[in-house]
Length: 633
Image (cartoon, rainbow, N blue to C red; front, side, top):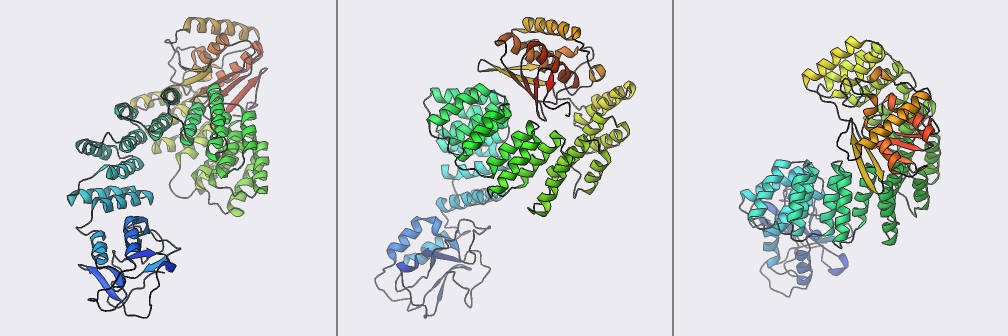
């Protein structure tokens, strides 16, 4: 039970402290008058009365020593939850208050409590560190840094237990400069060699996007634990450096470090990011051998990896064999259906999810609405949206509105899509406008496209996507002079296009291609293969889709031939380095252009290959001259 405020007690005192012990461990007389133990003007605890000068044996001394050795037993007696201002005092519901009875408690208890009270000069480093850690655990990193500065002002010397929560707070806030300052301090105190401090440093730099600094700290660590390797692997994945993450995983195994569940989650995410299916399958075998396949997080990452690498068959197999699934597992499978345009399968899976009593969340409906959008299931998508708000009582977020705009826009219902944006609460969401502008491009609505593009450029004047899409709309309509004008504006304002990049895995090695790549060692053979394919396609009736040659979303320059696009280079490389009939799997960081989409259909038929292309939006499965998207993309 909690100690009630007595007469003379300041109920708002921030240090009203009470010790905790099991009820059956100490029987107390509740009829005696209480007294107050104070430190300055801070009320610390209530005593049970009696003569303060009496001296007797102290049967509770063992309990108090256990209490002071375990800070998790401390609580703010005014609250049953973690005190947000002082989260180091945590309440245990199964326990009751232990009163400071002067007859049963040794005299040192009151002074010990006073020394541990927050804000008093007597606080030792242990207490400070505990408070720092509690703020991090409570999700308040800004308060952690504020307390750390207060600690320094009061002359306390930080130790390795201080730096770990402080670096974690810097990582959460992406506070790079504060993190660098902490790094300098811990070097002065000699804590840099500590494995947990070093790991926290690596994690901080990685989360701030400074992988070079993270690698420097990692390489200088005298010893590394598995968490140190995990921090580096996850950092590379977070910074879109999947290949480096896979190389690091190999080095980790060569060093004899045993991976854990976090390691495998990071490695599987790296495989997914670069479509390294064979590497993912090898990792899957290791996971089974080491007994991690029943772990729900690892299994969910396996589902996600197989789906993003184009193997939905494997994704379904892993999903159906999972001994237990959380909502994240269902979302991963729904997300896979969405990426591959399997709208009907996604709806069936959602029904199965309800039958098994799994409550969907907001991410579930993002995946479901995206699946309906890619499959052209407008009515079903609108029904899902209605179910989300009325049945499951989930408030729509900007991502849901964007999915609805995309759903209606792809179907040509542009005015309805714009009305959805107008009804969105709060600040305009630029992603929704981009979805509508993309729909204007697909359906050739230049008037609405101009209006929406102006809004996008007002919201994000330095983002090249708005300029590129508007240029393409003008180019498609034959308004080349207007397209030139938009391109000139983009150049003048300094908005740079994102370079097109494509990856392909051959013989367990991932190869990367840029537009008009000149650096690959097999470029002569690749160009010869492209020339051969171009001749065959022209004979079969193929014609280049030249309307968007200048203003494609890649960084194309005037005069570049369409066969220089990165995905065509990757396809040609795959054809000359794999056995006939071997499926090709490639991934691109941008939306595939119209000409590449058309030419890949021709290539798949001529060479008798299945070609799977994952672009920024979805998967395209090309086989025998047909794409799985049925040109609805």
